[in-house]
Length: 470
Image 1 (cartoon, rainbow, N blue to C red):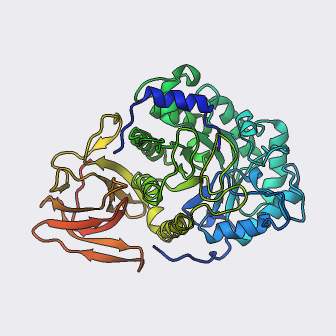
Image 2: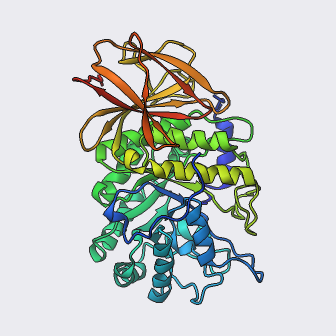
């Protein structure tokens, strides 16, 4: 993606830190939708989504879009990176004709996207340098948005900039207002750097220290306007070549807190390729990446990347730039995961995460919440490594639980004790195969969950005056 900062910055950051390690069936495309505004959708996207082999027989953009849709992808964050390979119309981000063609293809496949103006005609169509320079922040781009975006059915926002500094946010917000004045029925999209970059390079980002990331995120919400944001979005890639960064969870907590405080949905990027200093995750690690974000109430994520790109020394991924699937088993498992999550869309989108408690502490935690002693639910095994998420339904304000196995190497079977004065009378666990809830047996105020590697249990609660203390 995005060359997060320069690769050398990332290497320097890793040297400053001491991080430690810690199926559903493949489906066909859903019925085309005319607007994501009709329903709150869980969006699964990809930063780099298309490839062009420059050879005869390369699948067209339309064909690649259909494959993305069948894989469960329904969001393209940077619309200007949609290529014209095999299409009857030439790629031109200034042309209404091109955008209407893109929109027709996206609508046919149930995919949403952001309008954007950055494109490198001499590159592979995925120019991070253009995005950093933020060519969208110009009167010409605003003028084009005014005439083009209202004609687009499946465009849900305008991509403005990737990873702005603290000092630049006011200017980005200013341009966001310009877009919204001419296209009022839209949202603006900006993606944030991870907290490790912000705190390690405080002189660049104008902010330092633990807790600073929360302030950084709030500053963007203030500058952009909570009501104007498509998402509060960030990226953090935890899988280093030789370890896993547990400081990742500090960012998830800060994102959860600021998103909930301001009533803004949160979005993230999954690490699905390898580059300098980073390893290619396996399916357990990618499920862990997705399920830990869900444990914090995130309402969308995008792969970095579904299609590898040729920047930052990228050396492995899901699909390479020639359209070859690198690991068939991983590819199929990720498709299953995408559809499992989208099948839960109505549940996920109706939940707010009030707290995400960890049962075990870690040296790199600073803003992470630990499970309070005496809280309504306690694991009997003090070594169980879990996230216990206190959720609440948006419509009825009823309590809900998500319990996530925080290990991407081991399954866990854990017995929990329910506080007798909690008011909980019964629990039911969502079954991804049947798409129904199965009753959880409670005996003497105790119940047992078996959690596969990286698995999460989604638990509906019934009872009288159920009390979950803050």
